[in-house]
Every structure is written in structure tokens, then in C-alpha cells.
Length: 450
Image (cartoon, rainbow, N blue to C red; front, side, top):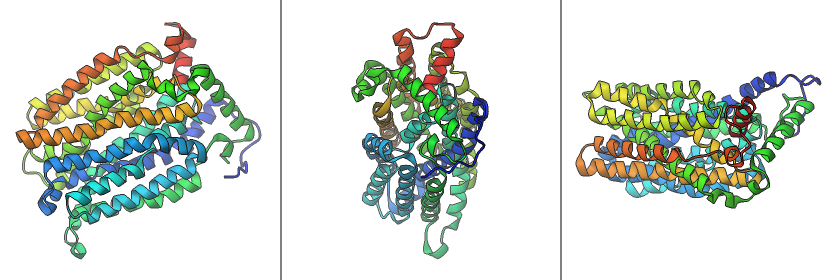
């Protein structure tokens, strides 16, 4: 994309430029993530109908829900390395076209085999979006702003789950139109918009600051020089090796993320079914009740990540967040409908606070191509939790007839993750570059991880 500057020659101050970056980039990225989550999770609303219409059991549903993450995880690293080479604009647009068309094709599922195949293909198609955006944010935002940008991006998950329930339920009211079932209309009409939105991404999303027509050349150069300096300072020469992904600290971060993702996707795929057993509720009522925990998650994502501005605070917030999630699921597994829903809301408040902090640890240790591949590697390994969680939850529900036993197991997993998180350290802490209690250290830390 050739740059034709359309802004004033004199560079604006850093605060003004940062506001401009948020205004120009984040709406596009959030919208893309909203669409991706609608298309990967709308099967939750179709779970009962897939059983009734096609004979797909709870165990088969859980396996199919999880298979998406298997191929997604295997494709993450190559996808991110390709984006590092060809640029975000082309690659994110490509991801959106393919996942949108495959998601729409879910309307033609005939049974377990076609269900499994399309979920596997959807994972391949969508692979790379999240780590790709994590990499993309490092091209634009310094250490002080990156956590905030990540928190805003993760709002896409919240928004998708807030609107996904009511929207999916409304689309399923088309049951019988042109001889199609309601769930078929839902898959079709939620899948195609992603393919069309890819054209907006192709037109509006610049690869780097030097490609942005809304920045002056001086502003773009200033951003790129600052980020290059920060990357070199944070990772050093050793950060350019992809082998750095196998260090104990990054493997520990992967374990914590794995446990976190088990929780997230179990809640996403099984919450509508759990709420459906609260009483005689319509699909629309289930959709609205399902959205309540995601409103809590959105509030947490907006309000809390900004406070992770030192190594010590980040670690405390991470451990506290994991324990809060465990307590919330424990309450949900033991109480009646109202208190149970409040338990889900309590847990959800910390969903994306935890996730935004976890990615600060590998980001503080990697650089260059290693950062691109490393973020993909971390996300790949962590997202296997999205395969394990729904699969195990489906088996537990089918074996016991009660999904609440699965919630107890996941609460225990989160406690183990919290204990493990106590051992996490930033790259700056490891190298002794940050002095506890120093305001400059807090600033440098915030920049490197955000």
C-alpha cells in the first residue's frame, strides 16, 4: 500500500498520536475479532438442535467443538510467520475470507463426520488471527500502551458473546423458511459477513506506521524508531532465536494460558446449555441470560488491565484473577440458578484481565521473527485447552448427566494455574533491568509488555 501523506508536516505530540492509533486501528481489529468469535462459537446455540435434527450427541458435540482448536493450534506458527513476511493487511483479509465461507458452510452439516471435517477446516482457516493481531500491535504501540490495546482487542470476545446469544436466537426463529432449519440460517447469516468485512480490512488496515496515510512521515518514523529501540532493549540479541520459546518461563506461561483457555471455551460452549436447564426458557431468553457473564467480562477488560504496570502488580493480578475465576466456577457448580449465574459473572470479570497479562511474559523475552513465531507458538499450545476443555466437559456431562461436575474439575485446574503463576517472571526482572519501586522501571515494564 503506497503512502500518500494527507496530514500536517509537523509531528503531533505522543499522546495525540496514540489516541489516533487507537481510533484508526482498534475498531477494525475489534470488529474482526467479534466476527471470528461469532463464527467459532455459534455452535453453542445449535447444540440441542444438532442433537435433535442430526443425532450429534453431547460427546460428539464436545469433540467437534474442540477439533477446531486442534487444527487452529497446529496452524498458528506458520500462519504468523507468513504474516510477518507478507504483511497484516493481506493476511488478516485472507483469514477472514476463508473462515467466513467455511463457517457459512456449517449450514450444510449432515452428521458427525461432516461436522468434524468442517470444524477442522474452520480451525485451519482462522488460525493466526489472534497471535497475528498480538504481533501487529507490536508494530504500533509502545510498552505503555500495548496492554490497553490488547484489552480493547479482547473486548471482541465479550461483544461477540453479548450479541451472539440474542442474535443467534433471533436467526433461529427463521426455522422453516425455504425449508431450512433455524440453525442453518444462523450459520449462513453469521458466516458470510466475515468474508465481506475482509474487503474493509484490505482497504483500511495499514501494515505498518510508514504505510498509514493518516500519519506524517516524521510521526511514522518516530513510532518505528521507538518500537525498534524498545524491542532491542527488552529481548536483546538472544531474543531473535525461536528456541527462546522453549525456556522454562515461556513454557510456564504456556501452561497457565492452557488452563485459562480450558475455562474460557468450556464456558463459551456449555453455558447456553447449562442456562437452558435452569427452567422453561425460550431460546431468546437463554441468549440474553448467556450474555450477562460477557458483560461482566467486558467491564473487567476495560477497567483492569491498565493496572498491570509493574512486574509485581502483573503477577498479583494474574494470580488473583485465576483464583477469582476458580471461585466463580465453584459457586456456579454448587448454587441454584440465580447464584449460579452470578458465579459465572464473577469468574468472567477476570477472563480477559488474565489473558492480557499472560501474553506480557513472552512479549518481554522475544524479538523479530522469534516474536512472530513465538506468539503463535504460545497461542497454539494454550489453545489446545480449547480442545481439551469442551471435549472433557462433553464426556463428563454424558457420563454423569450433570455438567456441574465438569465445572468443579475446571475450578481445580485454575487453582493449580494460580500456583504456577506465582513463579512467572518478566524478561526485565530476569535481567535485573527493573528496580522494584522505581517509577522508571514501572514505565519501562509497562512499555515492554503492553
